[in-house]
Amino acid sequence: MWSATKRQSAMVFGLLLLAWVLMIVWELIQHEQVKQTERTALLNRGRDITRTVGLVIRSQRRFGAFVSQERMESALNELLNSGELKSVALLNGAGVVVASARASTDEDFTGVLQNGIRWGRQTVTWTNLVDLGSNLTSREHEPANLTIVMPKREPGAGPREDRPPPPPFPAPRRTNEVSSKVSAESTNQPPGQREMDNRQRDRGRPRFGRPFGMDESEYQSLIQKQGMHGFVTVMSSQTYLAACKKDWWYRVGTISLAGLAVIGMGMAWRSLASSSELQMRLIRAGEMNTQLREMNVAAAGLAHETRNPLNIIRGLAQLISNQKDSSTEIRRKSGEIITEVDRVAAQLNEFINYSRPREVRSSSTSVGDVLNDVARALQSDLEDKSIHLQITDEKLVVEADEAMFRQVLFNLLLNAIQALGNGGEIHIITGKSTATGAFIEFRDNGPGVKPEHRDDIFKPYFTTHQNGTGLGLAVVRQIVLAHGWDVQFLPNEPKGAIFRVSQMKPVPRT
Image (cartoon, rainbow, N blue to C red; front, side):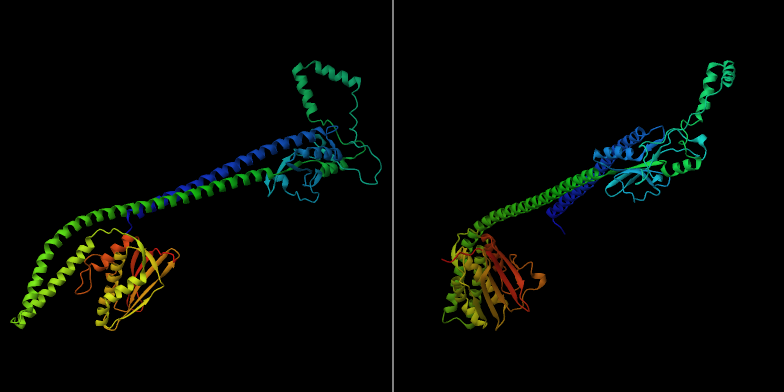
């Protein structure tokens, strides 16, 4: 089950991630809005250019309907200097180019007259239709906005003026007789009716007919081939694409910075949570230290009040046991009293030792020298069980309180001896794990520690030995933590146990 700190951290990390995702979505929405705005601006500029092209086409018309291809292309080339406009093409009804400026002559415009705006990879194409009327075979329905592009002169052809053909001859004037008749009839009509009849007669009459010297079939063929049904303008979309790309990289940069900010805030929260947890541990350690000091006072009083009676009891038992006239049973009972008194005194001493506040006075301590002293002190215990002890020392020197460090090594070696049977082996290894960290390990080939007991072996009064007090490893952990080190249990494969003291600070050799 997670602790409250871990749940809070998970909640904070989730909120930060959610905020970052929402920001990504917001930036994508803003980018789409920018794209739409730039697209609309490009379309507006395209419509303005299209209207300008239409004005240019109308300004080049001569005699109502005819436009010179050379003059038209020259005018359109001048218009292309606007920058975004790439090409202009005038098309007939079949989509064939009849005049162009910077337009490829082999470009296929088939079907383009059915489309309005087409988007390419780097261009935008506008198609503008021109109404040519519903019946091209009847001269009575030729529209007044008909535009015919006269092609360029063929190389080697005879000279001709660079202008459209002259207009057709006007209709002959009415005779005086007919004019008088019309005038007489019109005088009988109201003035408004006469004007309406004149407009109706002129509405169906074309302003210009076919050129002089061209029969009807040639004229209709000219309209089909050179008559302008529409014009196409092609604009570059580089400005639009550049603006979209610039905005996209701006959004990517913003999202990246937001991601870095989220990571930084997450790391800051993690550091804050770790700092808070460390502060709580320090507070609990301070409370424990206070309790230990209070226990030390009580233990000192208890030791003072208990040791004297125990010493008296032990002395009387020895006195009874040493009397010559004491029977064997009395001597045996006296020996048991002495043994029990020594056991109680040992437990009392360990309790007092555990409840004593640890005030570390560090100095340069040779690990090998302290190990050798501890091994000599426990030599009789090693010999009683025929235990082989091997020490691998790298001449390690660490900063430690020598008296406390000696007690740590004594308790760990004694714990290993108590766990082993006859003929066991103990291997003590010292060394450096890093340039600033040293360790010492106690390895044995005994039965080890059961998995269900591994979390409890450093707790006070927990023991698996019949005659153990359960304070030896607790004292080890207390002294190790007071030095800022770490102690842990590891299984020794294939059997046995490893007690490792790490994070000791080595002293450089002089």
